[in-house]
Length: 131
Image (tube, rainbow, N blue to C red; front, top):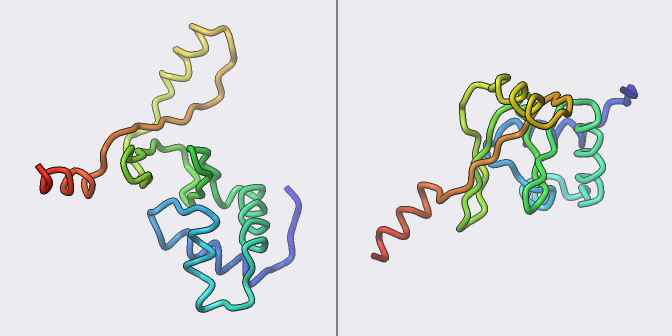
């Protein structure tokens, strides 16, 4: 891991990620931070997110759209098939699944990422109102 010098902008971006459970895209973070940080550019957000990922402070989530998560320990996510919202699912990590995948595939599985797809609570409410 390369030691980086202090960056106020990186600190602001990291703090914004830690304050939300939304799993924002780089564009979403930029739009949220720009009003209070007029000198911030979208390129700076991307560059600093990449640096935070490299140092292990942030996770990159590759769903249909790349998102970021300040919660770095392994945990599953749920993505809404209607609105695209991503939320954490608080389930314990299942090491037995890694072992089973290793046994079945012959590959040495080091970890897994679990993604559930479904309809979020807000979208279900809208669907119920319409029906």
